Amino acid sequence: MKTYNNIAGTTSSEFSIGEGAVSVRQMVFGAVCAGADSNALDRNGNQLSVVGTEFYELKLFGTDNLGNRVTKQLRGTITVGSGITKIEDTFEEGFNGAITLTLNANTVTMSCKIGSATSATYSIYIALQRIE
Image 1: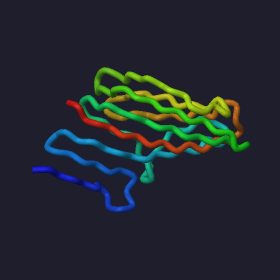
Image 2: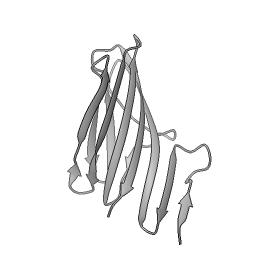
Image 3: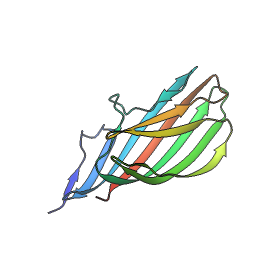
């Protein structure tokens, strides 16, 4: 039997689709760096939680206070108890903003870096596929 779930209704920042224990999730996160780095959170103020091993594809779009943009795509695996692998492609680098991923237990912290900007706003789209 197939299960299709929009976890929190039509205004959710997360959508999942799955069959049994195998699932794919799509999520949106955001961060505003006002004078310092900032962690990306979903609309409910939560960080990213993972289970087992998940393949991720992350798209990052950032704009600084002068309208300069940074766009990147990261992909790899996140394995609870082991770590994060990453391949990163940069498409546009109007300022030196960036993102750092760290794993603590089953929580992934996505730290958005302000770089040389006075302030920066980030939008992050991530798709996760549970493979274990």
